[in-house]
Length: 105
Image 1 (cartoon, rainbow, N blue to C red):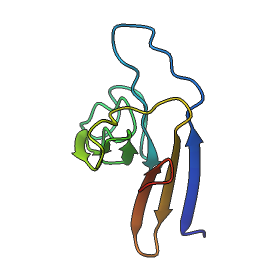
Image 2 (image 1 turned 90 degrees about the vertical axis):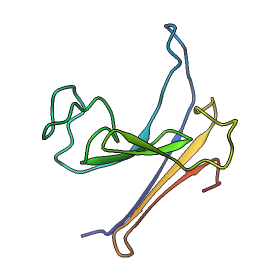
Image 3 (image 1 turned 180 degrees about the horizontal axis):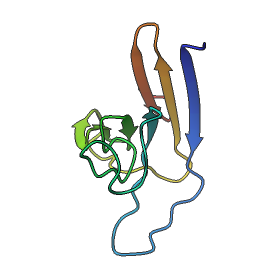
């Protein structure tokens, strides 16, 4: 079984269609994660990082169990922008989870 995974996401289009600013999260989830409201053990899970079965990264915060932990050194970067590249690494040997934005951890 593989114990290390990595993928990248390129934001090629973002469009604000309501008064709410677009919000994107990428990350990792276990097989128990379900991405629809009302699922999970006592949690309403709308997205990755909203319950205890997943971790999400939004460019500013790491999300787990619906709580945000600010990890950004750049206070100006609050949301992903067009052409951003998000790297997502999971190494179960260490264990370590790592996210990058445009090559910067």
